[in-house]
Image 1 (tube, rainbow, N blue to C red):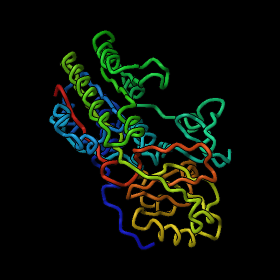
Image 2 (cartoon, rainbow, N blue to C red; image 1 turned 60 degrees about the vertical axis):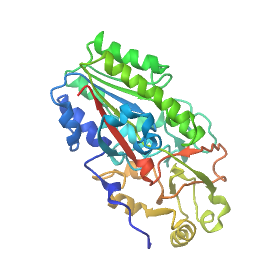
Image 3 (cartoon, rainbow, N blue to C red; image 1 turned 90 degrees about the horizontal axis):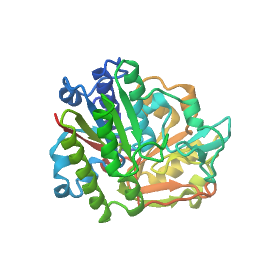
Amino acid sequence: MNQAPLDPGFFDREKNLVNLANSLLAHFDVKPFHPSLPAADAVLGKHKKVAVFLFDGMGELVLADHPKQYPYIISHKIATLYSMNPATTVAATNAFLSGRYPSETGWLGWSEYFSDLKEAVDVFPNRDSGTGKKIPGPNIMEGRFPYQNLADLINAAGHKAKASFEAPLRDGKGPKSLHQFVSQATDFFKKEQGEFLYSYWTKPDSLLHKYGTHSWIIPFYIRRIQRSIKAFVKKNPDVLLLVIADHGLINVKYQDVAAIPEIADCLAGPIVLEPRTPSFYIKKGMESAFEEGFISHFGDKAYLMSKAEVVKSGYFGPGKMSPEVQDLFGDYVALMRGTTCLYDSRSKTHLSFHKGHHAGGTPKERLILLSAYNV
């Protein structure tokens, strides 16, 4: 396939969320899985208490849309990081929490295919990707691809650590408001003698999905986040705070591949992973026809890779990818470079269209600002 090559940043192994996670592991006496992040190592120093706040979707170039409104966050920047491939919450947050790449964790994207079930599953909510119906029983992905998160590993090393998630996620005991976000984090360090805290908040991602990147509500809400960061820093001067995102978002448009016979006639199953990193299952013998049809329609808007190219290049991360992980995605993966999201209305009756989305190949989706406080 004759295509413009990917930027080398897609294969960065020195300045990404996994590197940051491994800095934290090493700091708390856990043997790291991968190289650490020098910028983080420098500020961690001899700090005994460390908090990481992850605000979903608050990428560096989302902040750059209104730089004068977030001076406190931007002035505390210590590094620009890359998200994971794809730049999406499933891949990025699980990579950070595990200290390992998506190629190792298996958490690749929102929708993954389980060949033994003959079903594509939205892995976070554990529902059928096509119909949107909840799948009964335990979460399939958590059962098949479990891992110890940073807090588990740090606790096992003899420190007191906690991973907190906005309610009602996980155990439902996390904060329900930004006020509680700050107060629960403060209580962990002051009342529980905590040493490491990871705290996750779903916004501004959910707002960016709903309203897009140009809505007035985005800077309004991020200013609230900024005030919450200030409040925590003031109340906890002995805690090093690191603030990150998992990705950014851009405004998007949707295209139904069912309306493109050159592509639709080649498909053997549902599109999985992400609308901006779609993965395709192809009918046997129609690979060349699919490549030709896809590139003729999206050659200037996407980068198409065969499964063999994905695995060989280490697109989802370095190292050997297990057969079980390879089985979760299709014969081809496309990285969308423009603003298009792809879907197939023939296999997806549960449709939701967002004004803003992520997981594609633009810098606004991929770049993350790492800021540090109480250094």
